[in-house]
Image (cartoon, rainbow, N blue to C red; front, side, top):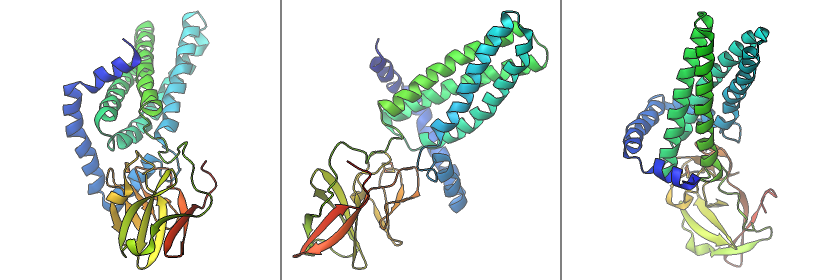
Length: 297
Ligand code: FES
């Protein structure tokens, strides 16, 4: 069974789908119940403020600490008892990091669907199991319980969290969760290209147009025309099918990320990467656009 078969098997698990169906709306409603503060907390946990998902940064804490604990436990078992306190401290630091990783992870997961959702849920369940084993190991260590059993539980937890990390890697590198979906091999226009006759864009409306290889969102708000990349940076949603908001913003129809039409910046997550922004002009009755930032191919 290769990696893809394993992922397909996880994605087909009906019980995972059932749990996800109950848990995702609960997470979403919990943030919504917090109103503006809930949205701010959600943005923080997604990493919108950072321009990068927060979750993979925090996961380095438990994975790194628990890796150190494996080494220190091994040294203790080889007879070097002085490393025992270091191993215990590494496990405690990992447990603190695991809380942050869980909270940011479940926030990101609440915006996933289908295969990503099932694999993400399994990733989370494995990490909860690993954290429970580490917690038990830590309590035993502090209560002077059987040391070898405590070390064994930690080792088992390390194996499980490694499997969870593998699923996390698959979510990013294969399922492209958390990557910038506006980063593409296609060429962004550096020179002005005509994309639409001016009279075909009504005021207070949006349209998807094509600028060479790149789909662009044109929006006209109170007579002013804006252009940003059409493909949502979060998971590739079609922005022209979303909502044009009053404050010169657009809301993605898939998971509700809000982007400024003025500069493409993320106003609300789950997106963390901004939308590429285009300069707009009208020329001979045609709307023309070109990329403003030079950070795209
Ligand atoms: S695709 Fe998820 S918010 Fe746009």
